[in-house]
Image 1 (cartoon, rainbow, N blue to C red):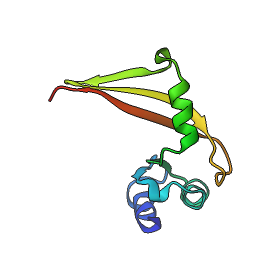
Image 2 (cartoon, one colour):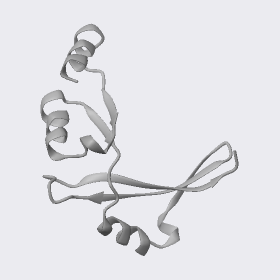
Image 3 (spheres, one colour):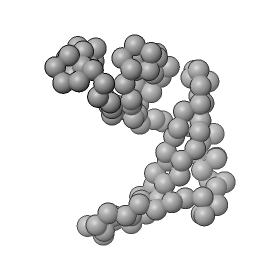
Image 4 (cartoon, one colour):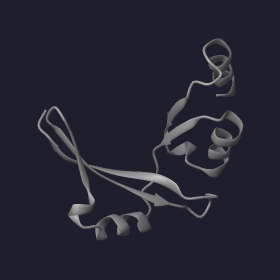
Length: 103
């Protein structure tokens, strides 16, 4: 990862925002520290759905969800802040649920 970020910064632009998408294997404090403090890049990671998150989502009223539609696919989503025990700070989380897929 360091080599790719260094190459982008050297050959393209030192100021261009870099955003990576990663699976839940990167959803830990060590990786976040590397992304934020050393590489200075943005990130999107998938995560596990823990019991406390399930409980929180189930308690939300339907009006708390928003809808995203593209073509014949409709997703419900909600944004919230969360801080796992191993994280040093709250992070933005987005829970998505497939509502309808007519493809």
